[in-house]
Image 1 (spheres, rainbow, N blue to C red):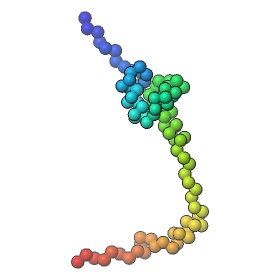
Image 2: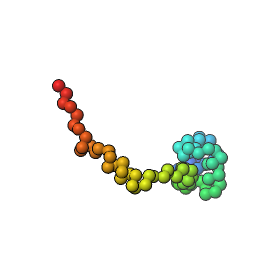
Image 3: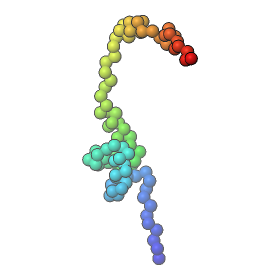
Length: 93
């Protein structure tokens, strides 16, 4: 008698399945050690792993650079011509 192969649970990560681990690492841009650390910390739910990976990537992004002072922006905007003030292009003949 043939037995049906057990179907994997679609929303859980099986760390013993090398193919599944490789695909999750590639999709979330994680190393093997980062993925293992996340799974040890929060569990094997794919949605929780994805959420944690997103938070990790967001925390490693450097803060934006300082913007110039509003007075500098206003002075620059006053000296540059806007598109309405710019000369129209010459007609092609």
